[in-house]
Image (cartoon, rainbow, N blue to C red; front, top):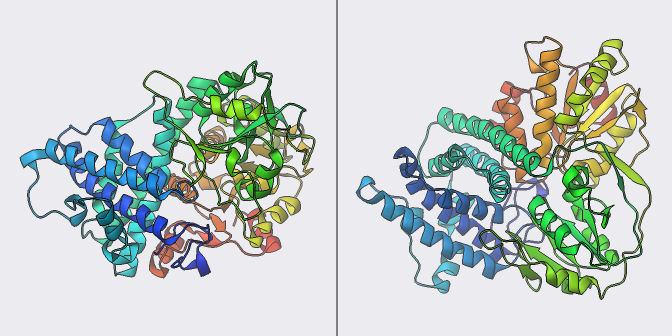
Length: 548
């Protein structure tokens, strides 16, 4: 195996025996093969796009398949093999649709056809499907920067599609991008493709924002309970709001409470979900605490998307663990996809919950969130007045991901030590490093404004662009905003590419720069966008306060 797609990759170089995340070698190899099959689909998909004949089913499949390969999503090899087999069928359908329109030699990913499971496993172990098959370091780096960013885009597109929102141009670009990795392109063309991925990331996050707010209303300022009640409960984690909606409907009146975990916390901010009296609040923190928090919750746990981490030997909650969508785990019960026009069936969770004791209380109190673009812009006059009066000197965007590395304590220390005339803008699970700190407010404006899930970084971009307009500035970088971003997985890379496309410069990225950036590619990003690694807390705060 060779995997370097997440921030915690071994020695910031790559995992070669077993993933730091816990991913076994065979699982990693099968995920590589699934990407390989997606590239084969894209060879035909790009041609169909040019003919105006790319169908949404093919686009949806590729997005789902890429989502399967995101860190901490799929752990069941049999489920991944089934996806590979489905992908081969999709590829052959696309190939037949292209027909005689395809000329010239085709890459192996577009023609390889196994005769059974043994040949799939053998191919997964072959070097040609591995990232390292691309020998030139900088070419490999640019291709993987593109593929990893596209994985994040695909995940957001998949969420939007679940809510009935799709754009053919997003699917078309994903085909173009994946197909480009099978060709010998110039460095300039590859960089251009990466920047186009950033543009597509912006449009995809905008689509998902529209899908979420159309279905569930605009997030509102909300005090979220972090304590527990005395009823049995179901804990829902991940990002899928459609699953959240259906679970709340099916648990209403059953005596079973519902709690969010991790990246599902922002579901508490949506008006459509507030009508459910049994929706209690949020339990616990970010994804990497789940071995303790899933244990103490006592009731069923539903993983709707990443991030699911392997159980430890002492964990006893496998019998209470349910997966759905792209998520899989050996021994966990999987909730099937919803039938056309229907809902998923969560009755097994409800029945199990009724036999379980209530959650163990691990904390009490409330946290505040719901500061997506619609809510912040409603307060725009107050925010602008606070900036003009000097009450707010600077905004610091500290969005992104949380993770296990001790060096992530940096983000907590930055939040604690920022001057009291600064406001933190956040989205994603990075917030858990500081969203329970008593940081106070500035004239009634909380010093931590949580926009929501990682895809809600789109809201932060909208807020920045509106402030630029309000202050009559020509460049987004003239705003009193600094970017101190924490990354972990591939959605964060999609967000980073979106920010670069929007022209944001001077981003600090940590706790380490991505291992998939070769020195030469990193140099280009530094020279063009002034990307820099995090430094010490005091030095970085001092620099940010000076606009550096």
